[in-house]
Image (cartoon, rainbow over all chains, first blue to last red; front, side, top):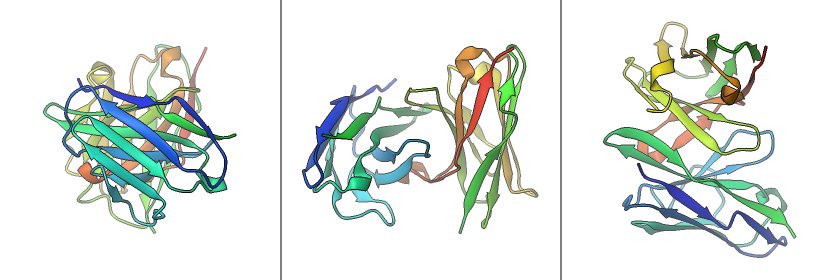
Length: 109
Length: 117
């Protein structure tokens, strides 16, 4: 079973600063890594799929990089609405399963 | 636009069966996978399983013995049953449209289920 480890657990930043979030897989997942944003009381929102592709309607300040075991989500200049929890996720096909990382909370400093 | 809405009892007694439905409006459930995810209070996200519109399913091995998912194309809805629940099953339950490697692009608002006597 692939385990996804996100770091840091919490990131304290100010609006306008850049955020760098990490997701590390216990074994190679190629580029099959997805990122979600979740705000309190809301469902997760799809941000990035296949490691680096922004989902429909996602602002360009969100970018994903990486392949293999190490992935990064970068928010280039934090807007007030970006303070939230971010999860990475991988889908395994053989056997079928879906795994989430533990999440990184981006909070206002 | 396509919207998902989960519904079901908010309170279930221990050892009983949790039953939820996810109604898809504004679009067809055909041609997609539909996934159930849950989130325990203050915790992360846990995959429960998914169902293809044809009825093919795959479940989380840790829940497989207690889970059944079904699809009703005539009603455009997906159902989840989780048997023999305990307090550990207390969570917000989400359904989501699943486009495989492109992620889960649409989510319901979630429904809170508490397991308590």
